[in-house]
Amino acid sequence: MTDPRLPRYQQIRDFIARAIAHREWATGEPIPTEAELAKVHGVAIGTVRKAVDLLVSEGLVERVHGKGTFVRRPSFANSLFRFFRYSSDESETLMPGGHVQDRRRVMPPEDVRKSLQLAPNQYAIQMKRLRTLGQKVVLAEDIWLPADRFKGLLDLDPAALEPLLYPAYETLFKVLIVRAEETLSISLANASMAKILGVHEGAPLMAIERCAYDQDGRPVEWRRSHGPAAGFRYRVEVR
Amino acid sequence: MTDPRLPRYQQIRDFIARAIAHREWATGEPIPTEAELAKVHGVAIGTVRKAVDLLVSEGLVERVHGKGTFVRRPSFANSLFRFFRYSSDESETLMPGGHVQDRRRVMPPEDVRKSLQLAPNQYAIQMKRLRTLGQKVVLAEDIWLPADRFKGLLDLDPAALEPLLYPAYETLFKVLIVRAEETLSISLANASMAKILGVHEGAPLMAIERCAYDQDGRPVEWRRSHGPAAGFRYRVEVR
DNA sequence: GAGTGGTCTAGACCACTTG
DNA sequence: AAGTGGTCTAGACCACTCC
Image 1 (cartoon, rainbow over the protein chains, first blue to last red):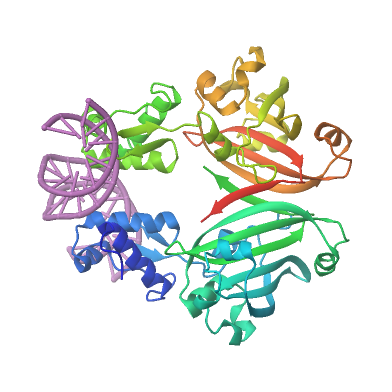
Image 2: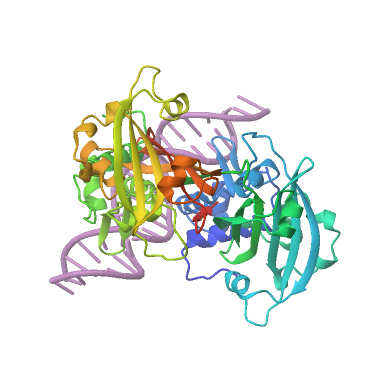
């Protein structure tokens, strides 16, 4: 399953990441102890520690001294601030709702196809989605997925995809998002956007393009989101 | 110098970081080999490796297999994309000029004082600065520094601070920036901003607030930058 | 071939949590 | 006291670069 030419610690990291993606250990539950992992994989404990170090740095897992190592994933509030980096004004306790409006199986435009590394004849699934805070629409999203990794999504009850997509990807499609690249820019509202977001035509909008990658580094989602500029804040740490 | 209660690998990391900040090893030059560092500090090589791992993850140093470990600092193009995350349209080869306009020693406003963790009676140095691409002003910056760590900055020839501030901080004040937090938002140009940036009043601007931290995790610079929204792009990787 | 970092071992002892 | 992760050792051998 894993490339045997990879270092042992990488293989063990992949093994654990895959097990987590497949929900073999529930969120908040401990993974096997380092001693046990070492025994199972037939390596020294230092090698296991290096594998776990990687997972910690990816945010997939959390060490607690004296207790164990725990699956750390976005049960809720977490994924919000890992990937939903938008807050209207300062309030920390925001909790956006998600509302999938539209789902289709289509050929993606060229830029999306490239970002998702799809072959020219491969299909994508497109979804339109609104994010709301209270009654207010704060973000209109246009989401693209590789169809072959999300078989059956079109037949799902839309409610199964709410309030957050990434936990649903994980549970339903064994796709675990571990990182993403985002590009921010500013655009002006056209007529339809203005109507959806409740701003006047030509009002400034924040545009966020995101490409999200799974535990194996493959791109699995591309989205473009638009939100009203007023009150928009985006926080990030750079190194 | 370093807290002896810290783990050895932390102490060694601090030792190396400090040496780099003090320019004991030039940019692009190799630091001592791992074997040598181990001998000097009287530890096993694995401990040194852990220290160097930290520095690599901080981007301070770069390993090259078979050759050595090299000081990686923003000699030039690097710091641009580490900390100057602004590009007008897609062109990758941008190289913004910096032009310090104004320097003063003043009491900082409350929010700046807090961000820099200054005591209520401590002074700050304020600088105004323009960033240009070709003839065009792309960013107007308002920069605040703790006065006690930048003694003598007011007497310097402004040219000593160009084209980039962070290398100057490092050479002249032994302050090495290793990370920063940024908050992006959108504002509208007032009359003076409009004039400086060459846009009409009320035009949308990108506003970037940044707090930068040194190798010891202390905040050493706060700045607020404004640039025209048109053509603005900000790329970031999130985990 | 000599020198560098990269991987891995088989332990030891310490610090913290839980019963 | 037992079990967990955290630090550290004193090596071994491999992969890569340079001469």
